[in-house]
Image (cartoon, rainbow, N blue to C red; front, side, top):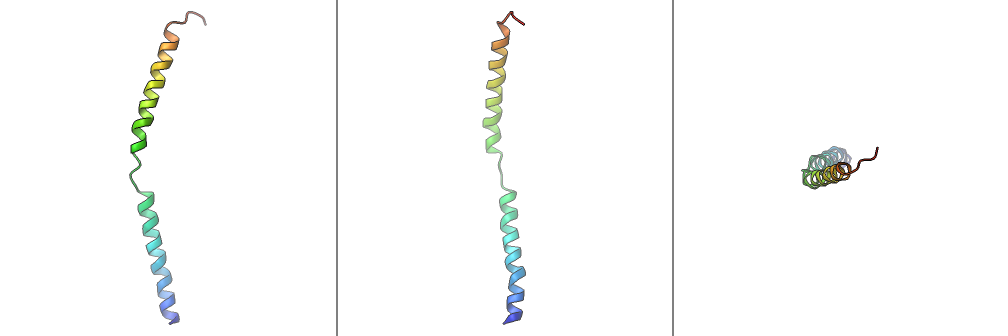
Length: 56
Protein backbone atom coordinates (compact mmCIF):
# COMPACT_ATOMS: atom_id res chain seq x y z
CA UNK A 1 0.00 0.00 0.00
CA UNK A 2 2.85 2.38 0.74
CA UNK A 3 4.29 1.75 -2.73
CA UNK A 4 0.94 2.73 -4.24
CA UNK A 5 0.95 5.97 -2.29
CA UNK A 6 4.46 6.78 -3.56
CA UNK A 7 3.29 6.14 -7.11
CA UNK A 8 0.19 8.31 -6.74
CA UNK A 9 2.13 11.37 -5.53
CA UNK A 10 3.92 11.92 -8.89
CA UNK A 11 0.71 11.07 -10.75
CA UNK A 12 -1.24 13.79 -8.94
CA UNK A 13 1.67 16.19 -9.41
CA UNK A 14 1.63 15.51 -13.17
CA UNK A 15 -2.14 15.99 -13.36
CA UNK A 16 -1.85 19.24 -11.39
CA UNK A 17 0.97 20.39 -13.66
CA UNK A 18 -1.05 19.64 -16.76
CA UNK A 19 -4.02 21.59 -15.40
CA UNK A 20 -1.78 24.55 -14.52
CA UNK A 21 -0.08 24.45 -17.95
CA UNK A 22 -3.40 24.45 -19.78
CA UNK A 23 -4.57 27.38 -17.63
CA UNK A 24 -1.34 29.32 -18.20
CA UNK A 25 -1.46 28.78 -21.97
CA UNK A 26 -5.10 29.79 -22.39
CA UNK A 27 -6.07 32.25 -25.08
CA UNK A 28 -6.20 35.75 -23.60
CA UNK A 29 -6.34 37.83 -26.77
CA UNK A 30 -9.93 39.02 -26.32
CA UNK A 31 -8.88 41.90 -24.06
CA UNK A 32 -6.36 43.22 -26.59
CA UNK A 33 -9.04 44.36 -29.03
CA UNK A 34 -10.79 46.57 -26.50
CA UNK A 35 -7.49 47.91 -25.18
CA UNK A 36 -6.34 48.84 -28.66
CA UNK A 37 -9.66 50.51 -29.41
CA UNK A 38 -9.38 52.50 -26.18
CA UNK A 39 -5.84 53.54 -27.07
CA UNK A 40 -7.02 54.69 -30.51
CA UNK A 41 -9.75 56.80 -28.86
CA UNK A 42 -7.14 58.23 -26.50
CA UNK A 43 -4.87 59.20 -29.39
CA UNK A 44 -7.77 60.83 -31.24
CA UNK A 45 -8.72 62.80 -28.14
CA UNK A 46 -5.13 63.95 -27.61
CA UNK A 47 -4.80 65.03 -31.24
CA UNK A 48 -8.04 67.03 -31.02
CA UNK A 49 -7.03 68.78 -27.81
CA UNK A 50 -3.65 69.88 -29.23
CA UNK A 51 -4.83 70.89 -32.70
CA UNK A 52 -6.78 73.98 -31.58
CA UNK A 53 -4.51 75.31 -28.84
CA UNK A 54 -2.22 78.20 -29.74
CA UNK A 55 -0.57 78.45 -26.31
CA UNK A 56 2.69 76.73 -25.39
